[in-house]
Image (tube, rainbow over all chains, first blue to last red; front, side, top):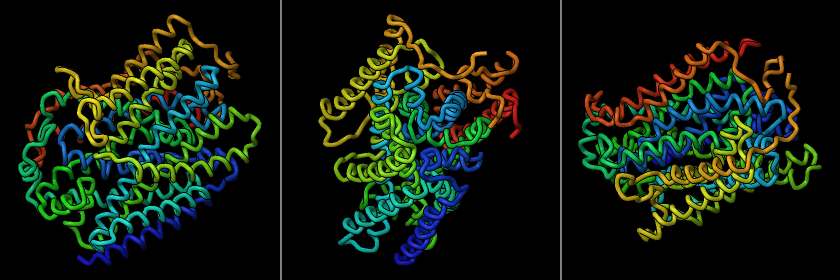
Length: 508
Length: 85
């Protein structure tokens, strides 16, 4: 291998990426000092770009790094990502056009804007805004883990001695560049670079999934070499069925509660285009399924297993690519994975910034001008990127996926207010608040219990709760959501619904 | 963007006959239901290209789901009326 060719291809393509990021502020030009222009690309995205943008939320380090890592380490239960993706877009087809319609007339930028009007409660809005902001943090941290994994393999082969420090510097430099172009181009930058990222990823995944099985003599060989994985190899072992089903359904419910997903939805230009692009998104999931299978394929490639032993299971996909392909292709695919973490991190930080500006600052200071609003969001998005970066230098998680699953438990607690609140006036704002608190306490307690109180693990390793059979391995998110719903619904029945803020729509 | 105002109505109700609504509901719910009933596909045979049934079925079902969803989207878009896009 010539590692300098890999590095050159990687850097050259990264420069193209940066140029696109800065240049995209001219795309369907709008007044960037307006929040709707900066954060929602002026709500002008048609079907194709919306498809790429929402797809960008899906094709992240979650797909390239976290899922393959755990399929490799633990096996079949982590293939739940595939039915999750299939299911989540069905849920989005039902809920999102309605949210879009509610948002359009009143110029909402976040789902919490809707909650604030619907429940006529500023406190609930602030509470849920912070919930969204906190839930995004581990998701962004996961992106950084993914970028780090690529750099570790690439730089590790170049220099054995200084690999760590070079990797860290490279990460920080890329984040400064990302922060700069998100600042100038907003969601347009993220959308245009998402097209580049997905083109590279699609091409790489298709090449890899055809070439590697042929070279090793078919998938069957890899499944035989994988022997017995803890949660099952060719099918789910025993009670991991519980984990699989609960992870699938809860992840499917959670995706469209995340502020970044809703941000993508609100940037489309009509309900019809939104619906059609959502309907086609399961196609994106095929790439996810193939990448998850890399976690099994790698068992038939001994030299890749050597790299994984050296650099850690988080490098399953980059190690497999490094072992099997020519230098230029390795550089090409690595860049895809790297910006596959950067672009979503940008979208997520934009959506966090919107929440903080619209649903916290604006409530405290209602008189800020549109210009100040946009300026604040831009600076907040810079701030959140660096908070996430600090987060990964500070927190240790054994498996990167568990970070995202903790984020899932947190964001699920906004489900009653957003998904149910969208349809009915019968929920009571106090009951929703109490449900939120009950769900959050249950979720956090169970995470601590499963990882530290019972097992005394050194770091975060699981989001399954260890019940007695037959309920073992249920995802904590399910239990926390049920507790939340119980309080929210029973409380609302006792106290009665909330009066909406005066809604200006004509009731003919 | 449709200009008839229904886009911004908080109390928007989908147009269309009861029959159409039932068909749309089935088109949306059926793919999700199959994904949710995991025991249906938690088996290793028959294999495809060396892949156990569990893995290839879920992948193929993504494509089937997309087809169901697209038909539902076409129906819903027609029921919504307004500008054709």
